[in-house]
Amino acid sequence: MRVVLQGSLQHFSPIELLHLLRAREGTFDAQSEGEHVRLALRGGKVVEAEATGPDDQADQAAQALHGT
Image 1 (spheres, rainbow, N blue to C red):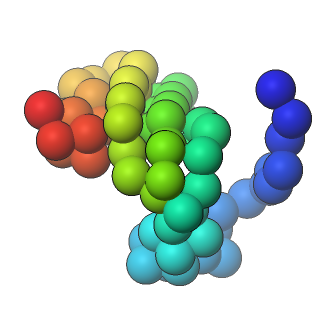
Image 2 (cartoon, rainbow, N blue to C red):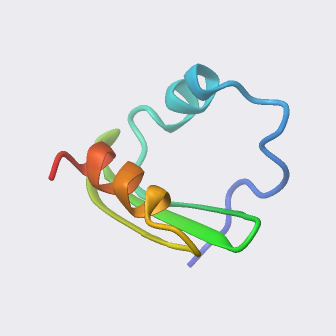
């Protein structure tokens, strides 16, 4: 897998991230304090989402983004 963008997201607002991911294909991975979220994107839409972490809030967020 080719990494196109890597680094800290602390300087991006959620809206800016959504604009950045719009019309993209591939995966978006984010990690923070023991939690990991992966979004699979096709045509800018989330087609699959998964999350792992010490509490289930990350998984709930992934499910909400995926629409399940």
